[in-house]
Image 1 (cartoon, rainbow, N blue to C red):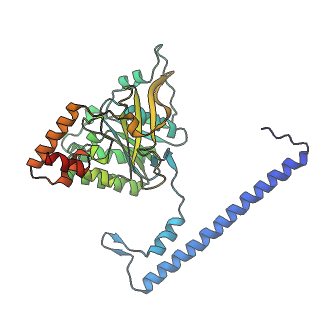
Image 2: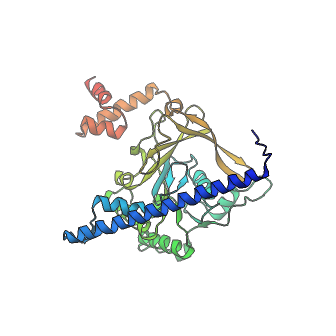
Image 3: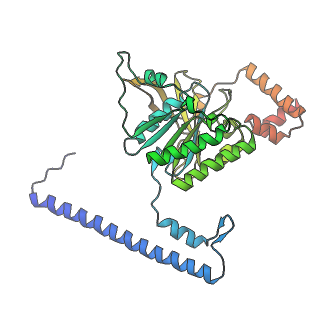
Length: 355
């Protein structure tokens, strides 16, 4: 509905009132920050008076009250992509092969690059493959924001003696020299070839977390999942590699293939540390991969439950599941361990073992 203003002076009054409100809000906010800063300093003084050191070895020690007062002085993180990835997070996007992880990641990068600098470390495609993906049938090229930088490995200067260490160090140097704070790494294999081994995975995540905290970075890492049954919902156990990887990530989301329509994909949120747990099994994002002009992207076509896009288990699937349960039980694994590994309930494992 359009509002017709018959009084020219009314607009001026309305603008003034809004300006005053904004000014009052900022004034209150500054006063609150000032009070919180004083409170934090008093908490610090109290801690020192109590002879409790602020740092003991590698640990920083603060009271809970001082912690939240100091944290309140810093701005809240912005959402980088929906409620799936926030500023200051090391996030993971995973899926089975050929479901469009890289397409979705470039789409995320292109959107963020409209307002801030983004580094896209592309360890998957050659520059020619990337160009063909983002061209139309007539050869017209997609126009990305100049804030988006694609980074690839220079094969001529490749350090194979300590490859994983060199990759991490060069990622850090590239971020520093370009001034970018948002990094997307495609994919995990190049960060840690031995990511399925617990110790290597833990060290990898330690390095990424250290980079995040040291330079205030936001990092999205792409990863694979082994071939999975389309009858089962996506869980944390589908992330390829050690479970230590999942535990370290601040947030995790995944792409699944719809069993209802092979052209459809669904996006499911699996882990959240900040923001809302919005796109769970009861509200996955349903998308189709389409090329609009020269830009290949996920087009949102609605929302659904994950169950609607799962395949009804066939007799062959059930037979294979029974065989898997028998094999794991034969290895001495408990009902709980079997259920966790196969993403099924303990009661179902128990029923099959009693048969």
